Image (cartoon, rainbow, N blue to C red; front, side, top):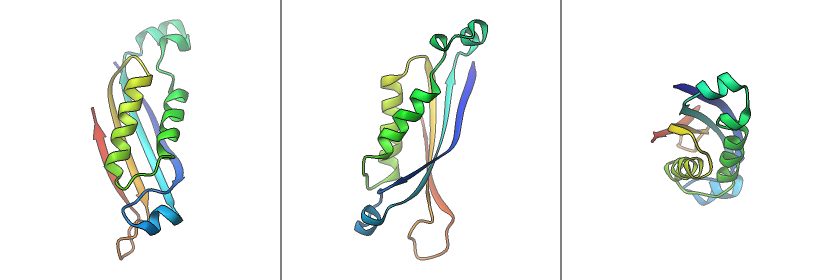
Length: 116
């Protein structure tokens, strides 16, 4: 087994419970960890034998453009889309962070992490 990790993907998006968040927007960070069998790709040096992490990024980017009220909803959609569109994945872990959330105080970020 092996892990493919894409860390610190940054997006500006319009997610949030409050109407203002969906108008003004905010910065979001996404970290992705894919568990897969890397042996074949390591042996052949052929992308056809690997999980294409550029395709994974494009899937995440597309899902981040769809407005949602909750981080949990976005993370679930990302996981569902990755399993639907990519093959060879045994486990997915996604961490989504909203930077400087409007919670009434100085907060660096709030994050939701889910795996399946």
